[in-house]
Image (cartoon, rainbow, N blue to C red; front, side, top):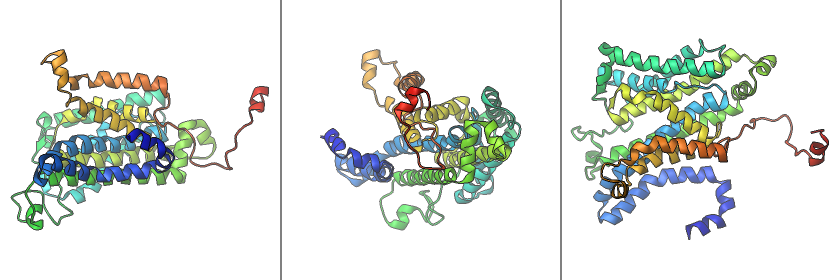
Length: 384
């Protein structure tokens, strides 16, 4: 039934795919709560049961969508292979954790501060790699990510080392209401509704959704501006880019700074969501996963990257629910441990089936004239 409806409205869905996707994402928590409320027979049961679905299958996926869209600016648009992107993620997380716990600053103040700090480190990374390309650039960025992680581990006086930072303050509802039960302005007390921890998760879901949409909006606008076209020219051919009079130094630095800024935003949100940060959350594997999402989704394609994040991260979370596999392979079988094997299989399959990713496209955003199809006769005769 569903397949026939999709087939009948396939043209409409293809035309308005992005708008329909945003509408489904906006309605996702509401749908989950209503379905679970009908299943449990009470609205309180619906809210409480939605915790796992909103957090693991909503917030978790959107965090990686935002990270992948930020890395897409560096890798997909500017063509700079960055293997240490998780460093900016860590800078944003620790900036919020340290300033929030020691100085009691609000999330709404620290969010732009974390993004600015990550952008600053992105510029610092950009200067040493201005003359590097390809494998050499990848090695330097990989080293940068490891340096940041080792500094976090060894600078115990500030970062508390491997023990991490706990007690990170929660996000408030724009300073009007709190999500701490003990506070007098707790949201349930103000609105006179039943107490539930699901309110905070639902609020965080819409917050990260808004940050993702902001990332997409800025990326789309920048692509149409001269700086975005300079990124694409740099990606295609750096020598030709210089011959056109484009300042490649500024172009690279803006790409690193912009991508790092969104990584810092995601890091500060991660710290607020977890309430705890430690160096184990920012290992090289995270950079590899984010880069794999960008490659599988298609470098430069926002929709493809979002689909890839949903498949990879959502698939990993879905593995945790497959308890029936323990009856087949034994009680000691843990399906989620095989996620990296599935990542590898997915990358091999997609690279064979769609070498440029799910929705990969290298077409520039601007044309001097309207695109015209080349006649096949020219190609046969060798003129095209």
